[in-house]
Length: 491
Image 1 (cartoon, rainbow, N blue to C red):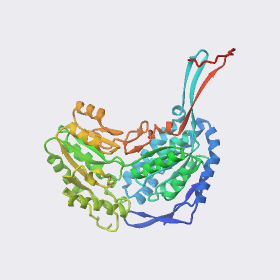
Image 2: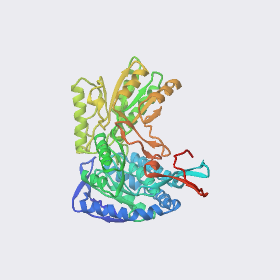
Image 3: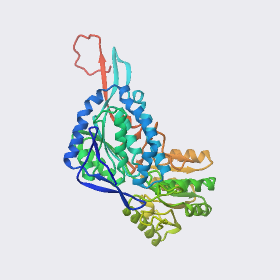
Image 4: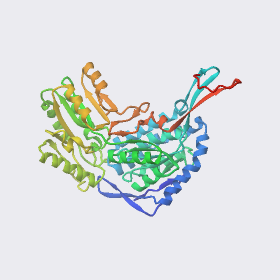
């Protein structure tokens, strides 16, 4: 069994209050991880605070040198990192390797820090007067990351924060914590000074202590909407800036002209991949037209043929959900929906793959005849459950998305440029796909939801430069001006 530690001031730090980390495919403990006590939290904060002034004064080009080297180390250790993610999260090795690749994209973005974290200058804003803006680091910032992307989200946050001149304290999910410490070790190997990257494990009280500390200047969070709202509110009360990304119920609108085989393939991958535990998974398909039957006929055999199993086993397409509690919650939601009148086109929710009967598995499930006030439609189940609805027009489909309280992502599948254009213009979601089932933009853009999917007006990746810096506006004049003028006149 592995022993996971904190990472403070460039060193591993053990703790006495430990919990076990389980492999969700086997229900066996694979590691122990310490839960930080108040003294350890303060130790982490002080180490970051001590390192912050020197790192902020480090030149832009020198700040990004460790990121260039980290990029190469992540490539070198990609298989190792993917194996660790799969063991703690349950996703397949291929999916985990893809997550590492997305994290590397975030590092590559941050390597462009010297060109991206700049201000602007305007000449002659008045007679002999120039005005400029400059971007200052915040100091010590906190990142609280979810179990479902244990390396990608942390790298999206940390890479930009560090390149912008901040010290970063990473509080990962205790359900999949191991890879965060490995990243910190690789950062150190890449030459990042001690204290600039910290990893601190803990429960809710650790997150709250980090937010409440006067040392912390910002917090970035990704998780469920109730917790995102709580984090945002707490940060506001503490007087620090916050971005808090929450839950989702992503819709795919399927137009009558869409290729049904393509749609069925894309829905199967998006809805059931990673056991439905992606923030951008499609969980509602809205079929526009007189009959959803043709699409369901395509979806049904695909859902039935998905290979359920442990993530490390060759041929596995969908692994387990992350905990026993999640498994029981999703299975109950499916059973309650069926009891409430929903029709199960496919119900593999109670399936346990042979040889892994103790794991936390939920098989692909497709529900129809679900009402829009049903929890199966309104709530984020975060499992491999797809709801299929039918409407008559694109207007009705857009209204469904508009009226849902989540607005993380949405997609349309169509061959019509006019329908796609109207969808892009009217859809109420932050990340939008046209014939793309998981429309997460590349790192040069932002990861950002709308409505109850996000609190705060900035997102991850490229929009992080504004979040992790504070602007200063300088008005200067160098010619000597004599005389007094008590008026307030335009420049």
